[in-house]
Length: 67
Image (cartoon, rainbow, N blue to C red; front, side, top):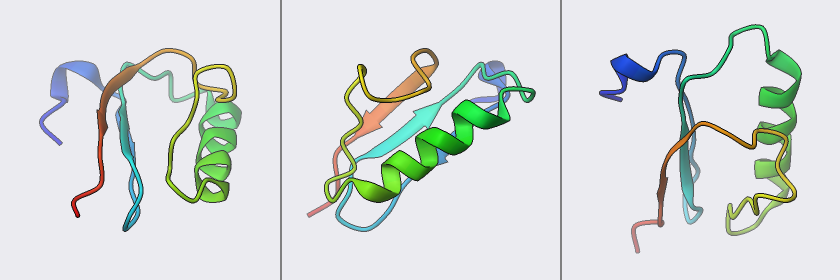
């Protein structure tokens, strides 16, 4: 993902959904990472509003779906 300077990095992506790349994560923060991934699964468009998502910091990119 070319985010080596922001390790630990995760990406949430699915067809037709917004893609999120989170970085500078603490690997010990498993619960907020999993909760954010579970929330992402429930969103038809993949949009994760700041107020709703457990991961508040670390967004490196929010990429619209390729149409």
